[in-house]
Length: 108
Image (cartoon, helix red, strand yellow):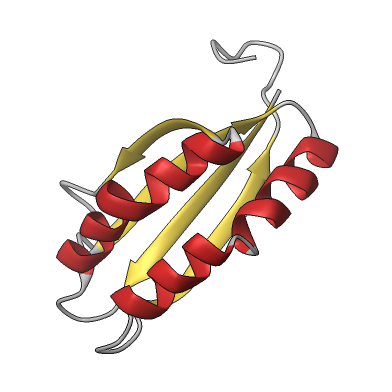
């Protein structure tokens, strides 16, 4: 199992809009495509409490390439992205990492 950590560095005052997009659009499309979330977080204490962290679980990189590619080109997702960013981008950039569990990790 692999885990993808994605950090959305939200644009000023756009974090609530980012949360809304995930809740009303993205998660439904993830379910359609079989994308498995581990969880979502925002920092309570840290450098920037306007960031959104989430982790997705993948069987392997081949699954990620296939499923993520299908999601990113889904016309419904492309339309939702356009609609939710009509007043500007919701984030300045994304930090992305593919993580592999250590031998002693609870998550394997």
